[in-house]
Length: 475
Ligand SMILES: Cc1cc2nc3c(=O)[nH]c(=O)nc-3n(C[C@H](O)[C@H](O)[C@H](O)COP(=O)(O)OP(=O)(O)OC[C@H]3O[C@@H](n4cnc5c(N)ncnc54)[C@H](O)[C@@H]3O)c2cc1C
Image 1 (cartoon, rainbow, N blue to C red):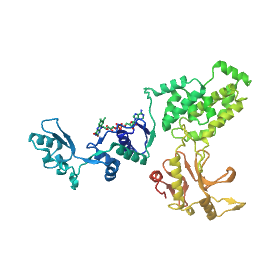
Image 2 (spheres, protein in one colour):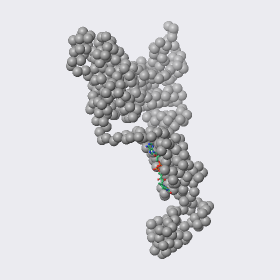
Image 3 (cartoon, rainbow, N blue to C red):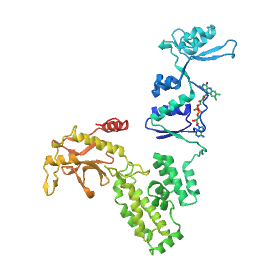
């Protein structure tokens, strides 16, 4: 699905296009590139009959529009000197009236019967005034183009459309983007230049980068793909170098005096990556391919490690394997105040919005709405050698409890202790937990003393997300 649109040109055409698209597809990110240096044609602007539909669709206030653009009402266009008698093309809707019937047919009738324009147009038109009759108020306008552009620009900004004031110098269009990227990477003369290509790609493709990277993985190779998918600059620059040739491999093996160097590297890396298996298994679409992912990642990390040893960055296989695994895994230990959630390929946090919304909605339900914790077999906790009562346990979690990403498979409710400890709240020995892919809103581990389980409709979560998104106060 299209997620980003860039409109080139911020004159009347570009601004109107942006407003229509943003109104229709609110979630799409829209940017306009315009150049104040080049400016606009700016010779004048008169609307056509579609203008009213446009302002209705986008929800512009007509009075405000007329006031801010110093608009005048448009009755039609007078063609003087084109025919024997001046011809007035009327743009009011009189021909749709019962008197004349359909617009085209009405016009034909007027021409055939030589009916004068004054007879079928609003009389105010000939007085250069606008009458009070709302039914015959002209629905078209002439604007001051500059003011109209200022007004539309203001509306674009209000809707969150990004305006970039810059000049486009050149545009290259090629059918096969991946081949173009391949050429770019191949053509880059140094590792730094290659990395610059990677950086440019990421900023150019934004959220679509994971999809592009899938193609890059297939058509260019896993090493370049790894360089794109990670955030650590050192790891990026070593993996972009790719696999060493046989001669270089031999040299590197002798450098660390290990004839089985590649196997040693893979062994350490694989063992380091084992903590990732759960995370990858829980990524959307990740389950089926996670073993392949771990395998190819380990192999690319091994190639990066070989490059690191070649460049004298590491003195031993273990140092290289451990350092690069750590750099790679750093992307999977993200924490905001509440969660530890892995990044996806583009450095974006996986499903954070949904997970966070779900946690918040459950929190609200848990405390204030539907769920009374008294009805649950809450496992007691203790402090200072003394066991809390049920009430004290519930009170403790109510006061201090938060959702945490724990164990990489889901988020758990509990209290984070100083120095990294974590006390989960458990009911019947089961964690209160939301799994990564637990999209259905089910809270299966929670059953109250009557055996009722608690299922939350995904609608509530979307409602919550919408409310957050619109900046509305949430429950
Ligand atoms: C002589 C003349 C008379 C006209 N009379 C009327 C009239 O009476 N009534 C009427 O309705 N219409 C009239 N028009 C048409 C009307 O003015 C234009 O159709 C309308 O303003 C065009 O809007 P636009 O958005 O296409 O172009 P513009 O308003 O010119 O916008 C072009 C945009 O592209 C940007 N841009 C251009 N090059 C680059 C670049 N390299 N990099 C980045 N940005 C760039 C500019 O900065 C600008 O933002 C007339 C046109 C002409 C030429």
